[in-house]
Image (cartoon, rainbow, N blue to C red):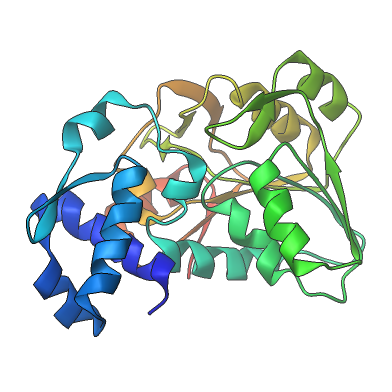
Length: 258
């Protein structure tokens, strides 16, 4: 199990139980206690937990006070589900496409799975996505970043300059995530600063894909993004419940479980 996968599981255990034990984690993961302690130190530096003698406790109050984790930390949560969602979404990309990819902890993995032989253009406001892309060094993908004011905690660009730059682009496909999808079809976001760019790209694109893990059907952000409708596609993971699948289908949207 990789470091990022262990951290994902530790966060899941903290959210469920409120605390974790070093010896228990070492046995469950098949690693040394020192490796567990290192993982806990790194998560403590990110503000997720507080280490104790022999373990750690969840910083639930601090989490509740924040609107969102930094995108790098949110990327650790439900890592395996997000990767499977992105693998499926990447298979929908075709030769010659121009796609918009938003700045989220789910879509940042999308570029890993785009077939290397495809010649496409990716437009984005996400520095995190560009950092992922830089590690891949795929010369067949042309990246365009909108630029603008920089949000350090989220590794993204926003504001009037970002919108002005984005206005020139009409991608045929948009791949986005969100904070939540409600039963009435309301799609919400957590970032007031970035939502305008997402709305513009939804208006400009021909086809929109929402990449969301199962938790997005039981949570909601405070910012209106759009309404789910006929022609939209929702891609989610196998932990989604039937009730969520039913209300998405009732709205006329297509849903894919991967």
